Length: 186
Image (cartoon, rainbow, N blue to C red):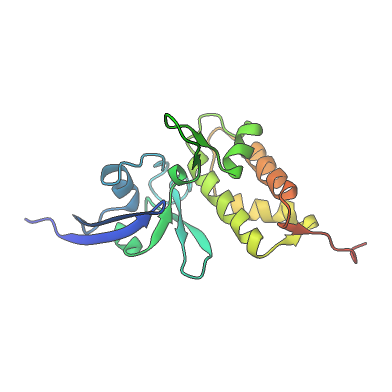
């Protein structure tokens, strides 16, 4: 029996990868770990329920969404662009030093994680939310609801939800241009 392969080319964290031959049914998380040597994306439940494995899929229209990499085959990502948790921090120069993204920094400041296993999925979901709000700001009074909706599907086994939520809420409220005040609201 011969293992069927497919050629894959995609962009990961701004770098072109491929073409590379991979097993036809390979899940994206396995591709990231075994072929791209990117191990920050975590396999939590392996069934797409916990969202620890979420990566960001950048769309051609400039928007983005999260996709669960444990249940999505690598073929789905052919010729597309994704971001993993390794792609958020910016190189600060010298000996591998990097500056955390605003989302990562907010999580650090709020002590948002305990074991950190679910953190990559939360970082990616919060990043997608912040990027969306840059394009489509919301009323300040809707921030709590929007943060809850954006993070609701992510599971944290250490029950760090409150700190993740507070970090994202505070980041949104502190970042100019993501919210607006409704002067007509009473």
